[in-house]
Image (cartoon, helix red, strand yellow):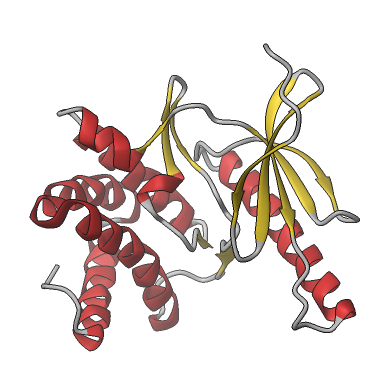
Amino acid sequence: MDRVKRVLIGRGAEAEIYLEEWMGLLTVLKRRIAKRYRRPELDKKIRKQRTVTEARIMIKARKIGVNVPRVLDIDLGEYSLRMEYIEGTNLRDITRKISDYEKYYEEAGIMVGKLHMSGIVHGDLALTNFIVSSRGLFLIDFGLSHEIGRIGDKRSINILARDVNVLLRNLEANFGDKSSIMFEAFLRGYRAVIGRELEHAILREIRRIRSMARYAPRV
């Protein structure tokens, strides 16, 4: 492995993302940046809490059988989280390259179903956060993730519907009319985990959300 010094590979509203070799491994370092509009003590508290939450949820996700990067280190003094680097191609790009992409969407549905049944909301189910690697499909970037506890009541169904709707909107934005094929494949995997009754409740809520937003056709 060629030595990789810390290289900035991404910068978002909440964090900077670096690629770096660490203890012989190629890793991703996510460091939450300070927000000047917040009081310093509050800002530190928020960054620390979100770093801990992200690490905890990723560890829990692995325990329930969802492929996510391993958490290698956490530094609360630097508000940083170090994870293994997953080499591969994101789901958006792989869909444009191959014809048998449905299997990946079905697997994505299984992954999201496992998260939801465990009370975990990913928060950003963009196609670029699903990575097809030599080790299988991985889900990354849990920066907006949180836990909701009880599943099945009106509040939880709304939250889960919004999570799935992010994926649906992403599909439509990238693939237009063809997106229905991919979403149906996703639902096959999702339904296999959460069951038809909960799936139907979530789809009804998605229809309600989208009718209020007035930006998309029916599901």
